[in-house]
Amino acid sequence: MSSYRRLWYSRGGEKLELSEKKEEITETLHIPVLRKKWQILVLQITATVSLLLLLKRMSDIYGPCSDDFILNNNADTWCPSYEHTRGLMWMENANGLLIPDFLLGVGQTGTMSMIGPLVLCLFATFAIERFWSSSQELQNRIKQVAAALLGAWVILPFLFSWIFATFSNGFHFPWNSNESMNHIGELFHPLGLMGELVFLGIVFAPVLVGLIGIWGLSKRSITWVVGYYIIVIAFHAVLTFEPIVSEVDVGLRALPTQIGEGSMFGGLVSPLASSLLGVAILVLLFLESGSAAISHMEYAASLPEESKRDPEYIRQFNNVVNSHLIQLLVVVSLVGVTTALALAFDDLMISIVGVLEGTQWTGQVKESLELQMTYGKVISAGLFIIAVAGLRFVVPWQIVSGYVESGISRLRSN
Image (cartoon, rainbow, N blue to C red; front, side, top):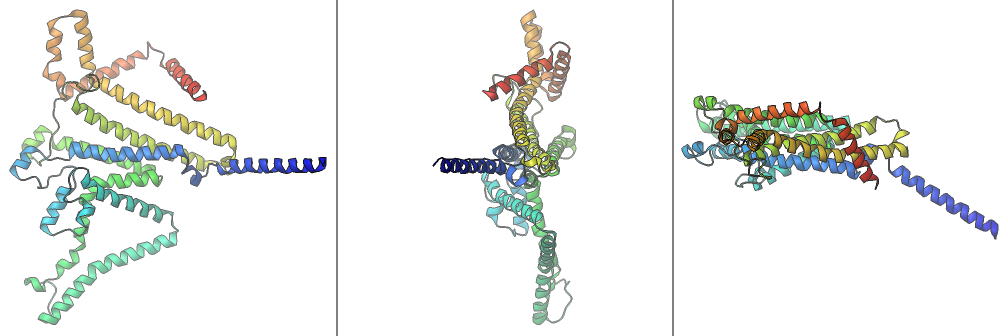
């Protein structure tokens, strides 16, 4: 009986060891496994949500045309604003559209006009990701089939219309002053689709490329999206600059030159500054979260095969990713608060001087137009940077950051 019990216990111990090994093996640092980890998914979902919110915020700020342009024309007239339906409605009135209206967002307003194009972006992202993950032979076949279909779309309608018109009107060249015998326009029919994709791409190309970068693991795509948005903002600023508008007015709505009084978050920022600050934070959040997910998976992919199954490497990887999530939240929050303080630094200095002196001069300076203008806020932010940089000679920032990191590690251990 005792030998039977020893055999049973030994077998039970073997089963327990096998189950523990199986659990260890299931959590590895291979890319297919990492794609399902909640930390990586949180980073990718955060980047996706920030990208969609950035699209909405950019459309709200840079989408409308100027009031004078709408009064001189109408609400549907095209201007080079960051809004896709105006150009598409202009094409629809001219030659009609090939893509259905519900997929383009034509006829919709606000957020509803983005639903159809976003569905197209999701479908295109999935198709491109499948294309990249397929074999080289399959990719070549897909390219050949796509080229053949495009060639057939260009040539076949032209040939059919020419042949049928030849039977009806006799032999003639495909170019003719008579509209019924002029078939050259059939060759350029696919250009209409290209024009529709161009108007869509002005707004939704960064969304498509950003989704490919996030879920297709491409840092180059993520940095391209950030650069694209910066270029759009810069072009809008240049085209709405007052000396440019006085010479050539393209109908863009210029942002106010005065930042305005702080009325949000305890009087820290104004509505205009809050909108622009929101764009900056969303760009930073998208860049950091998307790049972080790719960087962590690139590190795991570079490890030797035996290290990807090592429990110590797995534990260290989890600790690094968890710390990155906390740091991402803290850093983005600090950037937002610091930028808001930089924009309101002039008010802060004048308020301090007013408390110390109590003179009427501080009130007059605070209400001056120069401080409320854009360049006044830029000077204020520059002074704030100089002041903060000078504090490093007074405040031991490394010791402070060490206390903060140790406190976070204690909270995590508890």
